Length: 185
Image (cartoon, rainbow, N blue to C red):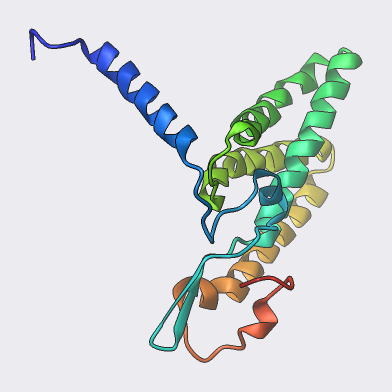
């Protein structure tokens, strides 16, 4: 170990090798999706697995995903407006949409198969964007903000309960009612 190549060089060699291999993948996959479909949960197909009459469907919570996408775009608009009107107190919100777009848009440059799990980091930034813009826009109205926050939590919980049979492969539920767009499977 003392006489071998340095750790830093090995790390850079590994990253370089992984990049070459990942960019060389051209084979299509049935569960792949487009990077621009992720924010609105419009993947070509939702991965699902069936065994012994039970189905496990890996579906996103549309309420959370839509609010994350809306929050990212709204916080970007507010940050740009804050810059142009020279409002430094609102300019701090720019960190969240920068994180969102910096972790989502580079997937447009990747030619290989992409999957919905690649969107999880931008999704986290989107949720933070939504919370930040929600807090900034309603900072003057604390009681209204509390009521809307409780409604948002309730809607998220309802969506989670609605999609739980998919996510945990429960038996005996009306699966067709949970399909929210035509090409769900």
